[in-house]
Amino acid sequence: MFKTGVYFIPMKIYQAVVISVFSTLLIAAIWMGLPTQAEYIPAYALNSKVVVIDPGHGGCDPGATRGAYVEKEVTLQVSQLLAQRLSEAGAMVVMLRTDDSDLVDDGFKGTIAARKREDLKRRAQRANEVKADLYVSIHTNADSSPRWSGAQVFYNSSSQPSKLAAVMIQEEITKQLGNTKRKALPGDYFILRNTKMPAVIVEVGFISNPQEASLLADPDYQARMAQAIFAGIAQAQLRTYNAEIENYPGW
Ligand SMILES: [Zn+2]
Image 1 (cartoon, rainbow, N blue to C red):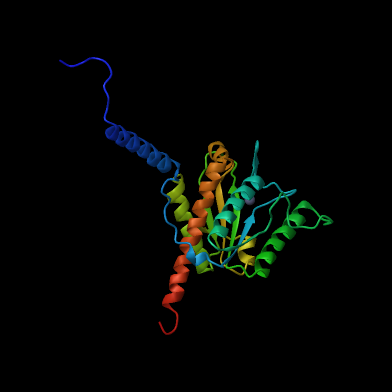
Image 2 (cartoon, rainbow, N blue to C red; image 1 turned 135 degrees about the horizontal axis):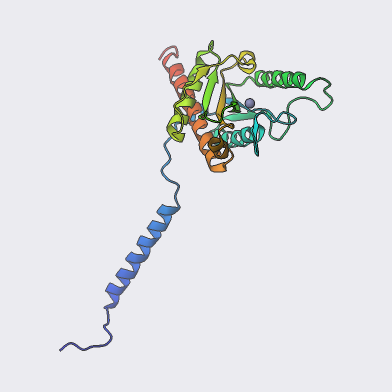
């Protein structure tokens, strides 16, 4: 006959069960707390490289605006996140603006258009002065129709390293954001013509597309965009680095 009532589990089994349950929970908690496996980005070639980041517009020049969405705000936010990622990888980052201002002196007398020209001239000058290895301009695109979307990178067609950086950045944006099939394109822009180092303009998306505008204002999306641009820069720099090693005399 079995006695009804309380059954006693031997102490050793009880301890083993408690320990295994707690350790399983602990491992699960640690695992869930870890960031999801990020793709390894070989960023060592960025070490000590001077990268100029130019957050487009600023001050009295808001760039493109649609309702509450303002280009100069998006460009600064994405640029700051990009600067952080590049600095962590050992690059020396020069931000052309860190607040809501342009690069023109307060006392400047002239039309808005003249001020804008002066501002762009100073941005190129500053990049040339610090002898940057790479210049990255961040903008948002805009069109009169709301239907267009997708980030796109532009480069100076006469510069092969600019093209490499643009293609790699575009590739990473396409891969990581998964919402554009656009290709990097040559672009005839003042800033690309007047900077003496490899230079690209990253249009991070269309502020004129309501869905994309709300993504562009979202800090998580901004961080993913910055991460993709960073990965593209790292990939381009790595290829340059490997080519330099291959061509090094005596190797
Ligand atoms: Zn712009």
